[in-house]
Length: 178
Image (tube, rainbow, N blue to C red; front, side):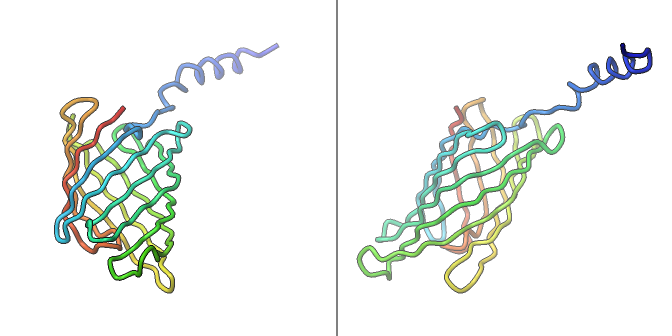
C-alpha cells in the first residue's frame, strides 16, 4: 500500500505534469510558394508531419534557365518554451546549374537548425543556420525573416537568405497551412 507521503507526491505530480508538457507551437503541415530576387527564382515547398516531432519535407527552386535545386528529407521539431519551436532538417539536394551539360547534376547534403518564435499574436520570426556539403567543400547557409499569419491557414512571409546555391537573396512567400 502506498504511504501518505507517496500518495501526496503522486497527486502533486499528476496535477503539475500537464503544465510541464507542451505541444509544438507551430504547424509543420504546410505548402509554400516563394519568389526570390537577385537572382530571380521561383520555388515551392511541402512539409507534413511524420510523427508529432518529425516531419517530411520536399522543396524545389529554379531560375527557369535550365537549372534546378530539388531537395527532400526529414526534419525534427519541438517546443522550446511557450512561444518558440526549435527545428532542424537533414536534406539531400539534386542540383543542376545552367552550365551543366544535358541532365548532368550533382547531389549534395544539407543539415540545418533553426527556430520559430511568436513575436506578436500573429507575427512569427524565423531564423536558421546550417551547412550545405558539396563535392569538396562545405558552404555556410542561413536565413532570417518574418511571417504575418492573417488566418490560421494563410501566412505571408519575407526572408533574407543564402541557401548556398543561388547566393544571397530576398524572398517573399505565401504559406498555406493545413
